[in-house]
Image 1 (spheres, helix red, strand yellow):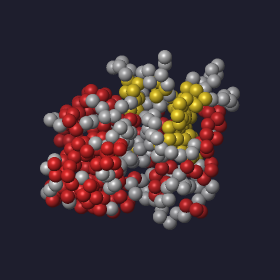
Image 2 (cartoon, rainbow, N blue to C red):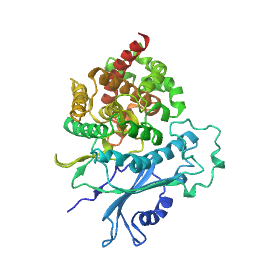
Image 3 (tube, one colour):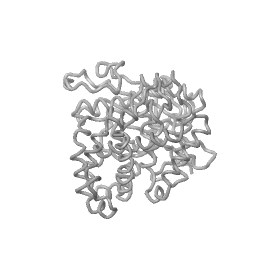
Image 4 (cartoon, rainbow, N blue to C red):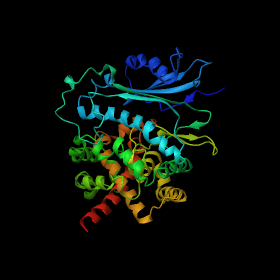
Length: 426
């Protein structure tokens, strides 16, 4: 028996979808014409923190596919839960970025041979009078905005109709064994190669898209402001594990202060201009569950969830993927280095020049940049108990649901951060 289509991870968030449901048929008719007058939802709706998705079966006999995936982001879903305008605005900008990527950037990458993305049938958003069309995603949120005075949010949102990917041909998993991690890194190298140092495309991406999900420019300033206290809490909560791994040292206990001091420098180094060397379009949230891997070697990998796509350093995707998706025992003994080496060789085989010393430096900067996000956001309330509760959730980073993964990451971050600190003071 054929399995249901594989479209995205079931995230398990509780939220009413009544408003999103009311847009389904009008959106399908915009995509395929007024003759389409019915649909059937397949399985459960996919309720994520920043979107609602649903798999839809369409009537037979029409000029449309048998099944599609509809992703919606509606302002009305978030005005009550995002009390801070910075957080609400970021949610809406994620949606705008994803639709702009599919509409304006992906077609250019397709021309250069990249096809590992789902087919797009319809992409539309409307955030007029909320976010000006020419307002860049990296501009700081206007703290003077009164959310109560914004225009009616009922018609504000984003709607994306995509191809469904079948579970008969593709799979999602996390954590990943080394061969699957290499499969994902190969796909990322192909993605990066299709925009490598393409100045025109990168200027467009820089102008229209956003930054990686963990880029400092995209984060609430409160995260960095509170990172020392957040790290102190982590150290208290994980004192036994840190001690057992030889990590209960003054240097590591001071890592919140050290990270705060280095954050601006690291972020600047990881946020290049579109005219710089070694720049490309990056995915920006390259976790394992944003990759649909072919079940066999002949089936192409498909990348999904482009809400954080941007111009950037490819190592931002590599660093996130490795530490989000691979178990510590596989990364030990040279495993981490072998994955970086595999990615670089694949990229070079595709014709991209990336000198070893520069690539390795970029990788270490990207790891520290990712760690700053985790320390200020994800780890500030983490405990061994919360990690145990999350250990079966494949959509959560290994370093946030596995104590051994977290401890190894702390050790690596301390090493890379020390090297960066030395280079700053040299």
